[in-house]
Image (cartoon, rainbow, N blue to C red; front, top):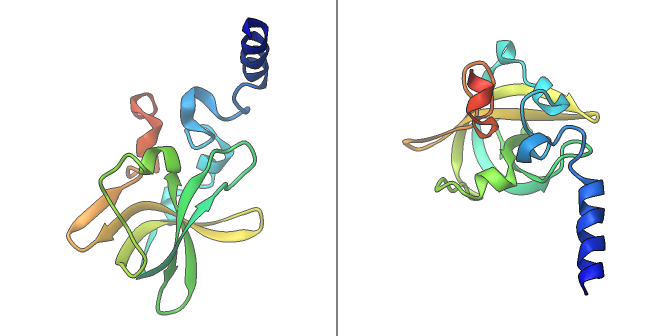
Length: 145
């Protein structure tokens, strides 16, 4: 039994986090290719109805995240919110049918057009996901120094 536990522990240690995972960010933190796709100079605002909520793994070596499917007047947009491990701990709840206004940037990942959210406004409530420079709130205090 002790040998089995040792082998399991050793195999997990060898597998370790992916190249961009760093201290628990799961590939969602600063300095990752995913974060590099966010250009605050191109920020815009979209508004529409949430017609779906999806789990997503945007890039290899990333942990699962949450995305909204938002139908605007002109298009249907996939909006990446952030990592599941962060969003599940928040009080903010967004459900299908909600009317939302989202600030963020358009980008392309793996040939798919997506929208990376910085803020999601639902009624009088605002869920802040990134600061003005595009730094994600889940990145921790070190990214803000």
